Amino acid sequence: MSTLRQSNVSTRPGSTKLLLILLLAQFVGIGGLLPYYTFTRQEGLGLRIFAVGLVFFAVFTMAGVWFQKPWAMWAVLTLVSFKLTLDLFNYALGLDRLLLPLSELINGGIILVAFRQVIPGSATLTAPQKIFFAFVLALAALVGFWGLFVPARADMALPFLVPPLHARFLGAMYASGVTFMLLSMIAKNWAEVRVVAPMISIWTGMLGLVSLFHLDAFDWSRTQVWVWFVAYIGYPLIAAWIAWQQRSQREHLAGPPLAAMLRSYLYLQGGIVTILALSLLLFPTLMTSLWPWNITPVLAHIYSAPFLSYGLGSLYATRQQTWAEVRIVIYATLVFTLGVLIASLLHADLFDFGTVSAWLWFGGFALATLMLALFGSVPALRGKSAATLSQT
Image (tube, rainbow, N blue to C red; front, side):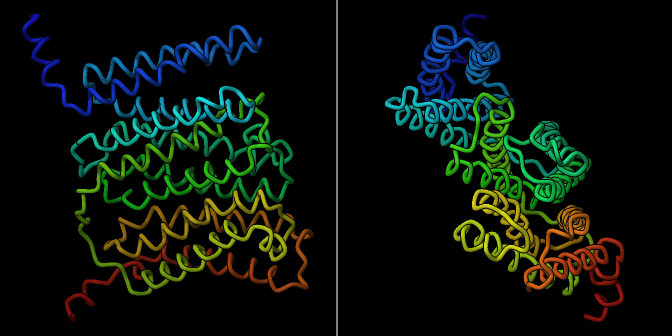
């Protein structure tokens, strides 16, 4: 038995040993500095429970790496998301700022080593991947419910309170996110979610990124703020890691090729929405003056994230070959455009119909809803028919 254990230790690859060293270095902050701060310099019970739980989770993660468990990299990336959120908390409150550069180097090293771990891709969706989709769905459902149905209390799910139209607009986006995740959970093949995984990473990653420019808008005494940053650091990391590990899975599903009309529409939608997203991201003040209803530069940045995901996701969808590979994008985007259209009609009094932007808003979302609904319900518009294929 002892000989077998020695053999297992000696066969651990160098990257695994390096990862363990980095995790041990990270544990200095998690297992030492954090408990010291929470139990000696503040009295919040919630933060103390978080500190103790994070210590146990860090030990659990290191054990998984040591014994080379198949779930170890999932735990590693989740742990990094918690640690990065904790570092943001320290930065926002001016705690241990001198140690933060070292901490980020360690976290960056952990992420790099995790991505370099060789995990064979799978043509079919795995249980861990579907569990991840379920976690993303849970947060999307929470924000979608409060945003759409109780907009006056949207801060129950969001880290900030926004007016009802803004809340319903965000609710429509997150209802679309629910659709993305629900359809991904019931999908069987990786090809069906090949476009969805990078869209998750772009959407959530951009939300996390733009939030860094507005840290003063977040109240760290609220649980919603911690959930926001843990999710929008962890979700993009894990989604990008999934897509990276699956990069060898390039097979396409059987079926008629995408119709030229659908492919052209995806190009058009992707181009317009990507330009809109980049404009919101790079020129937020200008876009607030052009937007059909009142928004702030902070919200312009936040809105840029899902729009960029829709835009680049649509462009990536044009590279797919069959309806099964783009249907999730079509149906989920339809939920978004229809939801925004309904929300806008409910608050039509907030729009100035003497401006071009208001007509472009309603006309654009109405046209997109119509086209997406047609593609989703009329099979003849999705792919080339057998008769057409026989003539080519």
